Amino acid sequence: MRVVILLSIVLISAFNPALAEPDFVHIKHMAQLSSDTYEAAQQEDLNTTALANRLAQQDEVLLHDSVIPNSDVLYFLSENDQYQTIAIRGTANLNNVIVDLTVSLQPNKALGILLHQGFATAAQQVLEDVRPYLKNNKPIRITGHSLGGAIAVVLGMLVQQESLPLAQITTFGQPKVTNVGGAKQFADLPLIRVVTQDDIVPLVPPISPLQIRNLDIFWHIGEEIILLSPHQYAITRGLKSAMRATKFTHKLPSDANLLAHTMAQYLSLLDQLQQSRQAIPYRMDIKLFGISID
Image (cartoon, rainbow, N blue to C red; front, side, top):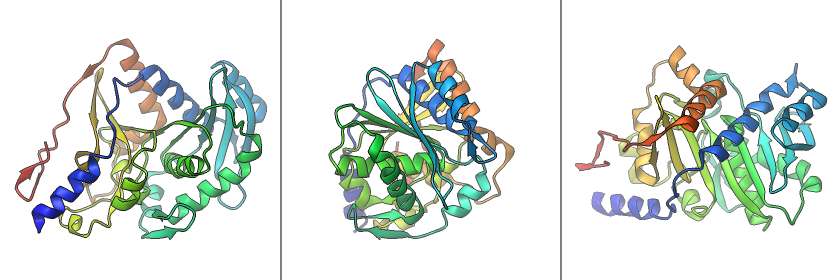
């Protein structure tokens, strides 16, 4: 029985397509736009002029910005010659992130999968708000950090389902949004998940190897790029990526964890990778039913 379960998970993992060498110029640009979502707010009110000026320095034109009522989700839509981009703000409060994720998955009728209800509701609200401003003939990119990254993933699912021209989703420090079944159904979602090695938010909700027998646990979609220091990165996917969550500590988040989750740290590590970089294998040092994940 254990072998059957393990093989089932490995097969599910195989649905994740392999990425070529990561485009770190693109990833850095998405990271900067994600960071801009935090800079756009002044006491929860949008400073549209400042945001437009900041985006103009990156050859982006601000098309629309908004704070969704009740949920306070802040996002903006910008465009350049090639793409239109939706950037969604997250939160920098690590304790709040972990508390917000202590919920069960709920059925989502629109997508036909189990989802974190808070992320699903926020994503639907963003889609309804941004839809009048989207261009049907221009590729769409979506990005976000932390909870903003989780909303970005679900938004990408909705955009893909509506046959809008989804090009890429790039998230930073994103927690999980669905389970094994949901990950399988959206295995073709063009998602790049960027994490830092000590950021614990992508590991929550944490899992135990024993929970895998249920095949109803939170599960990541897409390829995971782990930013290491200095000038190094690793790539994981599927089972190996999910099993990183078994390393989650139940202790209170430390200052190191908080720093690792900040956009400032993501931008710093990405700056290093622009100069020089080396891909290295990521070793889990974890065995499942006696079989090494590595």
